[in-house]
Image (cartoon, rainbow, N blue to C red; front, side):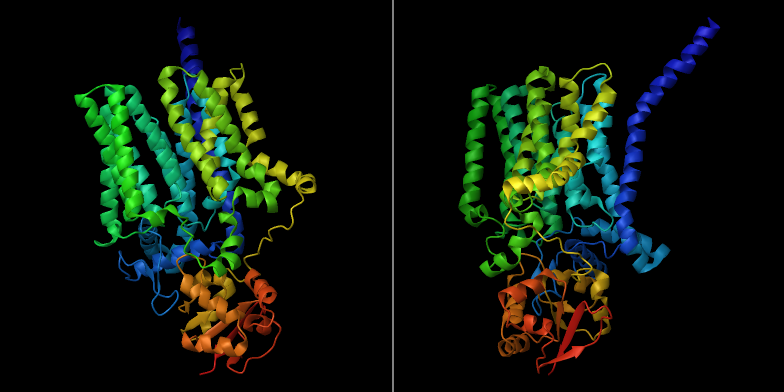
Length: 608
C-alpha cells in the first residue's frame, strides 16, 4: 500500500503538473525567442534607427508631452509652420510611454530611458498578445483539447509574420496596442453570456481600441452585431450581461472622449479619429443594446426584440448618415490628387489586395492564406460544435471575416487578421481532427500552415507566380539608411541653427526626432498644405521655387540621393529644383552646406 501511494504521488500529480505548465513554458520560450530575434536588427543598427516614420513621430509627440505641451493640444507645432498640424492620433499611447520614460530617467538618463522604452514597450505588448491568444484557445476548446490547442495557437501567433513587424524593437506606434486590445475584446466578448464582469471589460476594451484609432472599427462592429444577435436569440437569459456590455461601451466611450478631447471637440465632424461621428456609433450602439434588452422586460418575445433592434439600428445609422455624411467617404478622400499620385499610392500598408496581386503576388500567401484558411475551418467547427459553444464561434467568425475584409481594402489589416486567426485555427482544427496523438499533430500542422511557412512558400514560388501573373512592375523596398529616413541619417542637420527645413516627405519625422528644426512635409494625410508646398517647391523651376521658399520663410533645403522621392522628382520634373540640385547644379539663392561625410544627405541654406 505504501509503495502504491508513493508511486501515485510521484508519477500521477507530477505528470499532470508538467502537462499543465507546458503551455506556459512554451509561451515563455517563444516570447523570449521572438522578442530577441525582433530586437537583434534594432540593436545592430541602433534602436532609434529601427523606428519607422510613425514611430519617430510618436516619440516626438511623447517628448513634447513630457516637455510641457498640453494634454489636449494635439497640434504638432513643428510640422508645416507656422500654424502646425493637428494630428489624428490620441494620447492613449502617449501617456504610458511618457510615464515609462519618466520612471526610467533617474536610472539611465533621458536618452537611455527612451532607448529602453523603445525595446521594452513592444516586448511587453507581444507577451500580452501571446497570453491572450493562449487564453482564447483555452476558452474556446472543450475538455482535453485545451492544452494541445493552446500550444498550437501560441506557436501560430509567434509565427504570424505580418503581425510581428508591429512588435519589433522600436515599434511604439499604436498598431501593436490595438492588436492586443482586439485580442482582449475577442476573448471577453466570447464570454459575455457567462460573466457580467467580462461583459463590462469587453465594452471598455472595444472603446479603448477605438479611442486609439479606428483601424479595428469594422471588426468590433461585426462582433457587436453578433452580440445583438445573441440577445435576439436567447432573450432573458442574456439580457443582464449584454445590458452591462452596452452600458460599459457607451459609458467608457463618453469617459474616454472627455479624457482625451477638449470640451468642444467631441461634436466636431472628425471622420479619421475618435470624435463626434464615431462616438455617436459607439455610445449609440451601447445604448441601443440596452434599449433592446429593456424592451425584452416588457415583451419577452424574439419578434419584439427583433423589431426593437431594427428600429434602434435604423435610428442610429440614420442619425450618423444625416449628421456626418462626409464620414462615408475614405479618410484619405481629402488628400490632394497630386499627393495621392506622388505619395499615398506608394505607401505599402495602404495598398489593396488587387494592388498587391498586381505588383507583388508572391506575398499573397503570407498575407491572406492563413486567415482565409482559418475562416473556412472556423465555419466548419461552428456547424459541428455543440449548442453551448456555438456563440463563441458566432462572435469569432464575423470578427475574423471583418479583419480579412480590412486587409483586402488595405494590406495593413493582414497583421491583425493573422494573429487573431491563430487561436481560431488551432481550436477548430482540434475539434475537426480528433486523432490519438493530437498534440504532436496539431503542432506539426501549425508549423506547416503558419503565416511564416506560407510566406516562405510564396517567396520560393516567386518566379513561377510572376511567370503566370506577369506583374508590370514591382515595389522597390527603400532602405531606411540610404534613403535618409533614419534618425542618424539626418542627425548632421542638428548642427545647424534652428530653422525651417524643406525636405522630402519621408524625412520629416526623422528630422523632427533628431533636431529642433521645423519641417513642412511628413507622411500624414492631414498635412495637405505642407506636403503640397514641398512638392511645388521641389518640382518648380529655380526662380519659381525661390518665391515659394521665400514666401514660407524656409531656412534650409534638404534632399537625399537615395530617397524614392528624389527619384520621383527627377522623373516627374527633370528641370525642377530637386532634380537640378541632385545633378550638382547650383542655385544662386542657395548656399551649399557640407554636413554629411557619407554624401547621402545634401543641404543648402537659403541666402537672405
